[in-house]
Length: 439
Image 1 (spheres, one colour):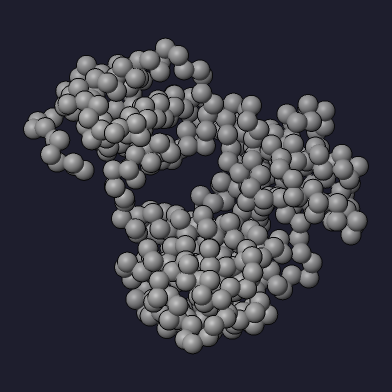
Image 2 (cartoon, one colour):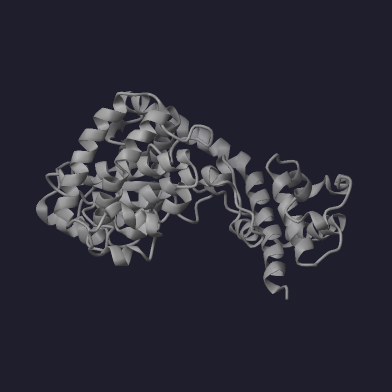
């Protein structure tokens, strides 16, 4: 319990709330701890006197929601996976409840990796300017600055890129020589100064030092952090080695907001041909300007690009995966050997789902006037520390049809989960308002 002085002896009587949406929400395995946080918050702000009274208040909010709530749109969470509302996370913050660093750090680092690597692959530097040690001090404590010795400025971009290339080559050999997590940690620890220095120059303090202090709380978390920086070095080296900077549209939704269900977002969408021909320099220039705009979904993007270029386009959907961030909660680091040989099954299926969902979206935006397939191929790009692995994913027409049928079945089953998600949002928002309004 977060506030034991408010706790009561005995268990809550939930038998009266077994029916309706609240009963269905309470039956979910993940709801027990969420309910405890909500009830504790109500007691904390003195909105109720007992936990049983608090559950009665929850039930009234749930009944009011059921009477007035519109039919919710199925979100990606509803098709499978854990959901926690933004309001509930804010309640936990106010109550000073934080999950252990290791439980969330790998996801945070993965999110950060997607942000900065997407930029650098487009030829855009995430670092706004060359930062001095004095500027970096705004982001970190003294032990971070000590990594750079007496230097008052970081290396310039060319020097940092050369340093990153040396680190990728050297650490790739050292890390591949051992399977021991402890030995890998020691290897990375011995090179942390150069890792941090190179990435600070290439990516900027805002990104590099954001999770540094949290990561230092235990050795495993720091291993996750240093592996992430090594991925960023490898990405910078790969981006610099491209003969021509590709034009990517980033974070593109696979289904528009009026569709019955979400399908997530593609990390990168690349136009690969127009009317069956490779892009011309003029078309690349046009696309680079178009990539700066926002699009409602992939179908909207394709419609606008075809109008711009005056022809039928083909696109490839590229999905980025990172050694830290795209594992699981129990296995936070992706297996390098396995991911180099072949894509992780769940990642391949996810990308196949993306390709299938894009068909629906293009059909909607083009009003069903064309049977030409615009998106039929994808690529999984794995950043595995010092190594990068690329895997092509091209589902057959029969597989796409089967995926669309399975998706429709999932959407029907997910409608109930969507209602429960919206109920959880309503319950959490009600409590959050009480917390914020307390004296």
